[in-house]
Image 1 (spheres, rainbow over the protein chains, first blue to last red):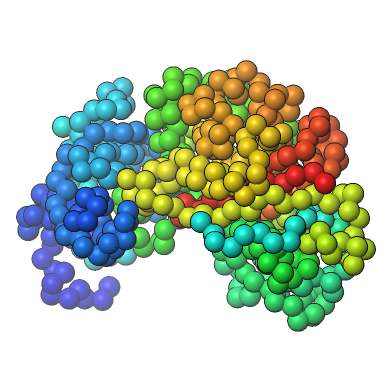
Image 2: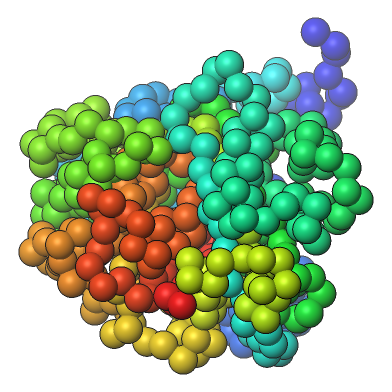
Length: 145
Length: 385
């Protein structure tokens, strides 16, 4: 194994995708979903944007999208995609944020029978080992609120 | 919306397939060439008269694979374009062939597609993408999310989704080119291995290998090339779209179950035809829920009601609007680059009245709709004579 640069030797997980998840504590125990809000058409998008996806304006501001949402749909995945590092089966949730955009992520901490479209969920973070070494990834997941 | 209006009327004059299935002893070129030769023979067109060729394929098989494949037929110097547009690669190749001819650039064009899809669940993003950790990049899980929501909103039972698969297999049992030809019951569909609730294995299309080809020619040039006009089928609309913003984001197909609607509206406008004129339709049924939502997006059923029409047998070969008459992706299988042109093949075969046991009575207008990752949608409308 090649030695890691100093910045990656802290042992703390890093955001699985810094364009969608901002960590708010050094130990990666808390964070917020992030995106952009268009000041021209009032659309909010999840994740990175240079141009507004709805109206193509560049008049965007970075915003925090918080940790709350509503379960729009879900499925229990029993045959996972290649490279899935988690448990099988796993629950995949499609969650609508108050600002409008939807976010796909695993739902944890919920019995299958308790899953219900329309239920309130909140984001939680889990550390997942990186595929090719390097620091763990802090991955955003949903759990019942 | 395209600003260019169609010019010359364009006909499909020949179609050909390599059977769909698994062919470990054949390479991509073998699959493609068999379909191309079959289409050229069907059209009565010589390779040297083809002015341009478009090759739809997705998985990397070496650079300029269209050129190296067609070089086996002789080096004629014509432009050959390799097309990658996900599961719509083949139908995009066909769309390009249409627009080249209608605008007067070419007289005769070849659109062909082939694929050897690896086994296992299909993903879209690169191997090291964050999606691998997040777990959302899973085609069938995306369809499952749509299915779960659809059932919640419409009250559709699981048996209604299963009915789509049962119908697909019935149609494919009469199709020698299909990957899966054995039929099964609703119970067998529901009891097959669960992939992602509510979708069982028999509700997900197999990944497959195969090839498909179509030869297109301007109507006014048919006589010049000695092509039989009586078997030529007219292209009434050719539409290709990508995703527009739907208020939720465009990063996963789960978010856009009705992306086909804008393309369908364009196609109806272009053809001067409406949903009431359509006699049969091929749609992108990568999963059972896909078929239901596509035929709603095409305005063949009111939103939320396609499942009832399916249960009532309206989409069967004997129904008033037969859907996926050759077995669709669910039974034909899904070699990405070939599937879009396979839909054209079936539509042409039906409109010619040459579909044998699968023949839809008095078929005059057929629609072929193909979706792809990136919210690609193609809608083609074909008309007899």
